[in-house]
Structures are given as C-alpha cells and as structure tokens.
Image (cartoon, helix red, strand yellow):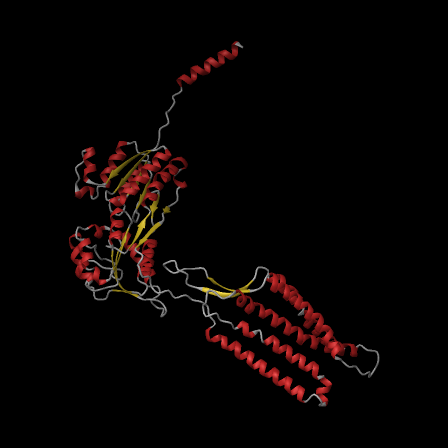
Length: 544
C-alpha cells in the first residue's frame, strides 16, 4: 500500500512539471469589399464563426481600414487595399485562415504566397482566382451568364437585339455563358433569334459587348449615364449588365426612367437591397443574384475543415446557388400547348376502315349471290361469310382508335369509357369470329388427313364452326364484361412533364388507361393461341 502511494505521489509531481499548452479557438479574418453587396457575406461569416466557436474579424478593403494600423496607402506600392491589410495580419501572427476578395488584382498572388509561406490557408470568393489558395467559394460565372440568358428569354420570348455591359474577368466569364445560352437556337426556324444590336459602335465608347469583349476596356464611371442613354436610343430589346457597378451610378435611375417608354428590358446582377429596390420600382425587369449569405457561411466552415483535417481535405471549389428575381408581367405571353392531337391523321384510320369494310361487304355479297356455285358450295358460304364478318368487326376498332378529342380537357364519363372499351370489344370479338371459322375448318381437314378411312368424305357443318366460336366468344365476352364493369379503360387527357418559363404546362396527351389493364389483356391474349394452334395444324398437314 505504501508503495502504491509513493508511485501516485511521484506521478503527481511529474505532471506538475509537464507544460500544458492551453487550447484556443481558431481565428479567421475576412478581407472584403465595403459595398452593400458584401453585407450578407459578412453576416454569414459572423454567424458561421459563432456556430463553430471560432474567433473572427472583418476588414473592409478601404483606406479607412489602413488607419487602424497606421498604414499610409501608396498606390504605386500597394495597388489594392487588401494587400497591406493581409500583410499586417500575417505579421501580427494570430490569424489561422484568410477569406479574401481582392483576387482580380495582378498583385494578389504574391500576398497569397506570403500567407501560404506563413502556414495560413486562404479561401477566395467572388471572382476569378489566381495564386496559391485553398478553395474558391462562390458562384460559377458561366452559370450566372446562362441564368441571365434564360431570364431574358423568359421576359422576352419573341427574341430581338441586345447589348451586354461587362467589366473584368468575372463578367467576361458570365458574358461567354450568356451569349452561348442566348444564341444557341439561332440556327432553328422554330425558335426566337437573338443578335447584338448592330447599330452600336462599341469602340467609340472604349468598351465592347460579347462579340468585341476581347481587349475591350470597362465602361468608364464618368461615362455611365450618356453611354447607357446612347444604347437605349437604339430601341434594342434588352440591355444586360453583367456586373452591378454601373447600376450604382447616381444618374442610372434617371437615365432608365427617361427611356422606359422604349420597352427595353433591363437585367442586372445580384439581389441585395439596392438591386431589389430597383426591381420593386420597375427600374430593372430582372435580377440574377448570388447567394452571398451562403458564401459567408461556407468560408469559416472550409477553413475549419482545413485546420482540423489538413489542406487536402478541402475541395478546390464550393459552388453556391443562384437567385432569380423578376417582374411578372400582368399579361403573360400567349401559351401554346402541344396537345399531341392526331389532326388530319385520323382520316387515315377512317379511310383504312372504309376500305376494309367495303371489301368485306363486297366479299359477303358476292358469296351470298354465288352461294349455289360449286366452288362456293365446296367452301361453304356460311364459313366464308363468317370470316369476312369477323374481319369487318375487327376493322371497326379503327374508328375509336382514330378518335381525336380536339384538345378538350373534359368529356363525359360515358363517352370516355365507351370510346376506350369499344376498342377491345371490337378487336377481340372480331378476332374470335374470324379465327373460329378458320380454326374449325383447319381442324376438320386435319381430322381427314389423320383418318384411317381412305378416300372418305368429310363435311364441315355449321355446328362444327359454332363450337370453337362459342367457346372463344364466350370466354372473350366474360372477360370483357368484367373489364368494363370493374376497371374500364377510360379516356383522359393529362399534362406531360415540363412547363414553360412562367411555370405553365406546355404539353398534354390523351390516352386510354385503367389500373389493371394487363390483368385483362393476358387472358384475352390466350385466345389468340388458337391462331398458333391453327398454324401448327397446317404445318403438320404439310409435313405429312
């Protein structure tokens, strides 16, 4: 016992001299812009840090932020405000991860490398990305452009002319997606066509739209109002802003309002307070926004994952959702629904029935007229008339099969059931009549070949024909009556999957259906084995 106490006391003494490093929360810094676009990002960043138990600080890339650490901005050296801020935080030594938006600047990769050398991972957002960063978080710019094109098609389905304003790599990527999506149907005659406004001289403004985007410079801030006015005076169909800066110009609202009578659709970027106000006031007709709050939430989560699991645990990019806002016009475009109608094709069914009916009637009339002729007598008029009559009944199913409801969504239940159930009634009953006669005759001939009495005379009576007819016909009638009473085929018109850009159904199909169709078709199909059996009899007779 004394030995155990001695060992325990020794361990306590040793533990007292072992240094214990206190754990601390990770600390992340968000270096971002100062416009209202970034406010949801900041909220999401703070909310995510609080949930993770991390310490976070937010720095606006603005000269006022440089005052906090007594730095004088030197344009020739700093080039962008985020660089001195990041360098200050790196030197401070207590930052575990960066979330940064200044990655469109040419001097950004070196400061990223400085952070990387200091063991500080960086995630970037809101723009093209160059340099050693861990992950990109934000929207796919190509998807943004395509979403803007789809929104424009929704607002102006008739097509027309457009001009698109862009600035820098991000909006250029959007522009490429926009043009590809917007003009992809220009080679089709059944789709609306879109072309750039041909009367605009982009080089005169020092900027370009999609066709001229390579090497073009941004729309200058001082020229926003008069250039937009020049564009609108061409009476083009749509003006699309691939970035939000021009819409923040003091004169933007006045220019748009002065030209609203031209009926030019205006589409812009993002969906924050200023842009949503434009939409509510009718200054713009549609917005494609970025899920900026989600971007802010994701950044600390990704940084935390890197800190806890290593840099290789992070994905190269985390793509966030897009937001679509638009004004719904009081008068929507006319809706054209593809109703999958037979149209004039139904007359083919009527014509085919007419040909079969006329032929069958002529055959029956000729048979009855020449029933006393030796050849007709030998073939038995009753048998021939029954065969032709069965074909006539079976062909009559072409009439309900050619039914076209002309797009009527509602018809009476009696008519809906009558149209559909008449098809199996006519088809299977006609089949029973025809093949009962053919089967009976073939069966009797087979009996003759298998008879031991040489040169014996064999006669097929009407009773011989009626036996298989009665059996098959009765079986069919029983099944068809059960089908009609218990689970009848009913004609119904239903909308097909898919809607137009205003969420309206664009296609419908009319068809006969019931819950347990197969349960009735299978036993009805068994009756058709009589034709197979008839063929086997004929084959066996030829073999002999």
